[in-house]
Length: 345
Image (cartoon, rainbow, N blue to C red; front, top):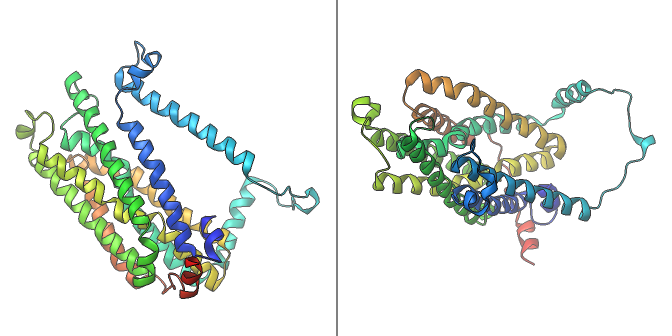
């Protein structure tokens, strides 16, 4: 929607950058709520005999999220203007939920050839990112803080402290994401979107590799005899981990804006329809997430190296995607000079 609203005046890159910025602002508030450990103090009723302090803190954050969603939904329903469809204009000849999916796959034939390359690069990009999204705070709690979620009282408390520290790191990540969102349109104009996309994947490769190294050092190579007495984080490694969390927000700003902008530009220049293009792009995101969600756990268990194998796989996919972005992605305009001048008035 942001790409459509801004396509005629500012260009899709600006629209997606604005979307990325507001997402970053919401993420900052969300991670602040997750990092807070005083929900059970502010709302004592959340804590019960079956729900400890950590459980009550989680319920407090979730309750706040539900309230905010209800408020946001109510404002949207009240302010959004929408035209009611005429019942006579609705085609109900092919009813059923299966018909929707059938029409979707049939419509793939209408996609421009360049769009299939965008889908391929998008899929590999999310294969590299999803291990981080899935295991970031768990990595902080296990590898950096040396805690165990199902361990003894002290081990569980240490793990929970690491998870909260991970939320703080993700807060820094969201701040970096928001700041970088202002720079993405200019970078796309100067370097073209495909180069920016490639550089962002190269940064992900570097940061994922650093997470693997930091995790291995913190866990002493995952040797049980050396890890047995470890409790709490090493201050230096914790600082490095937080620094990595913050810096990874830079390529994350590209992840949340450039793929959709490129897809919108391909649809505008080569046809295929904005709605269909964006819908299919979401499929290229969901399928890799499903693949990682089903395979990362068994792979980690097979190697018995914590979250390190998943991050190693993510780093490998990021490096592959950095090359694919340069080879496969079409040469889109990024943002025309006319659109840039119009945006400056």
